[in-house]
Image (cartoon, rainbow, N blue to C red; front, side, top):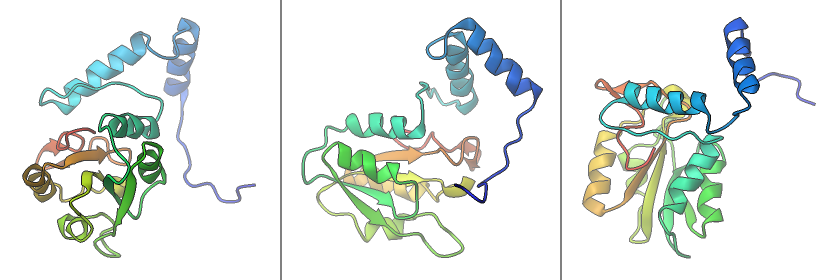
Length: 176
């Protein structure tokens, strides 16, 4: 039994009303609410980004990794400090997760230096996580991935709406 709640949720009448409306519509997925959310979030992110709803970030990561056609021996760099799904989806598709360390105790994200330490000629993709809402210093990583022809996947589960130089997280990578 959990003794300490990780966070205290703050749901009110507005959330109850919207959830009840969705249940009454009998469209829990693929309904008008999903389409409206996809359109609204795409517009919010801008830059021609197109969003699709899935059940979880794990499902989104799984789809991203599936799109890579990983082979046995292909490596995907993932942060050492993240939810286990980042590594699990790589393993599920036959790849090998390679852990990149956090920058420091005061910066729990990866950066280009910590990534470069583990990249090999077998690296097919890099997953970065904007941990706890703090954006990764992603621009050098984007350039590195372009030069090395490595797919960059942004896990933005912790940071929707966070931005770097007025550009939202989730709009830098090849897949987010």
